[in-house]
Amino acid sequence: MSLRHAMLGLLARGPASGYDLMKMFEISLSNVWPATQSQLYGELGRLADTGLAEVVAEGPRGRKEYAITDAGLAELRHWITDVEPNRSRRSDMLLRVFFLDTVEPEQARHYLRERAAAATEQQDGLAKVRELIAEGRDPLSVYGRIAVEWGLRFSAMQREWAEWAVGQLDQLPPR
Figure: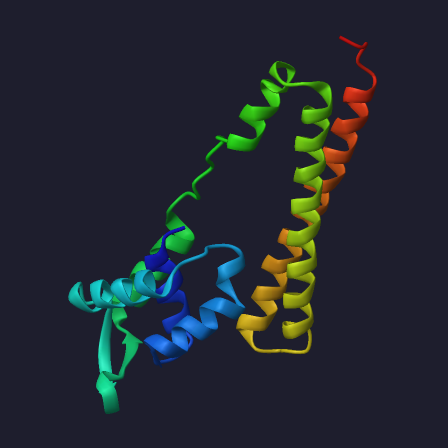
């Protein structure tokens, strides 16, 4: 996914200022695609420059409200239906697991316990997001719940795997 498509998706819901988009991003997409304020505002400018979005209103202190254009909506739809998702198989975390035998056994266990703790922390954060959108019936809430549920299940799997992996290390003979 690109930030470009995330912004187009939010603008497809209706016109919004950069500030409004930042707030929507924080409560919805930041769990699956984090971005900074400067990245969001920079992308808004690029969307306008390429004709995928346009400024539809300007207010005090340079506030601009953007709307998706027909070309932007076509690009978003093309990306959703025709562009194969990135299926990157690289994992910095798993690469480290392959080499845990180069550290002391307790350090290896600690590394895996930290992965379990990080997954639990992620799961707790996603549970709070789920509570925020639980009652919404608008499309952003419904699809947001679907995405949050994936995150909850994925983080649960990561935690369970890390706990299992510690158990595997416990079965190794002492050095």
